[in-house]
Length: 413
Image 1 (cartoon, rainbow, N blue to C red):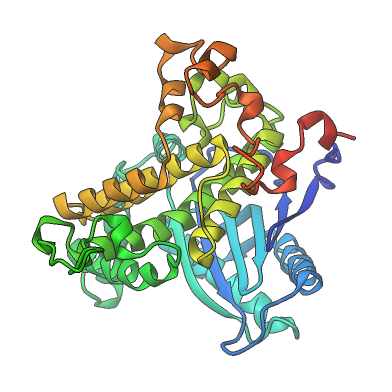
Image 2: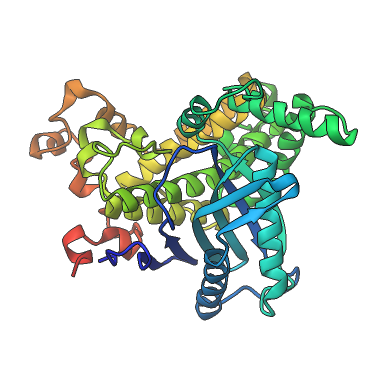
């Protein structure tokens, strides 16, 4: 069980190759200023061997201790940025941090967090050679809107998240002579990044995205123009890897929210990133422990995707996690104007090839409450879909992480 005091509430769980640490906020969540979630990707030095479990635990302790020691950051002209919550996840190749700050502007949030993390790494002998690969803000629409509604004055920024970022970039450009925010340039940068990331999706060759082989199994030539273009398949693959980063980030934050509020999705009054996208019928069951089991399942699934060891989806929870991953990929592509018919077809082909069936979609249809949740459903060949079976392997050959398999009553012991 988690300690009950705010100063003491911590959680350390080994999740496959991840070491997770959640730090409760030093003060209650509020809507002063604008709340930003700054995500920081850090990596061990190039050429260094991957960290083992003991080294990862040490890295968690160093990063958590360093961040918790920072109460706030002072900038030019008396500008202040308050750090009030953090999530640290260390994997064999580095660490992923999500740091929640209150700041007067998006760029101040990013710059201040990068400065803090950079100084923290530099001062630690064991982390001094680590590098910061990414430091950027994720704006939760509801949190941002609440913060903006509380703001006054003529300098209140736009309400739309994308317009807000453009607004800040323009203000920054006016002050230092740089060009204004260029949405098209950013879209192309994201596209390039996705294409590079596509190589990480090692379990799925282009044919899984609908690309036809030049020759079929009988050696006869195929009409490759009838299939998905290789470039579209590559962008779709990269979008899935890009989306996997968001999926893990946002599930971490949902775990933290439910842990702090000691509630479930049905009762939680704070906004959630992803867990609200699960079937409504079981919303009261989605508490902090469920969220942790679902997070572990998502990490295990995406690890197999990128490791090259994926065979089949292992349980119904993985089917739902893949549904969320496809959503993240689609939203990311649409946000940057990168979605077109070819990429959409590639993602559709991927889903058709990875899913064995679409029975899980019935969970979203309130008109079929009983189907798949009792013996009658099984008689029709429908996968059991009651929430108690979500983390149960489909058969003995499927692997589900032991932490996810355990029942809540077992975890409490």
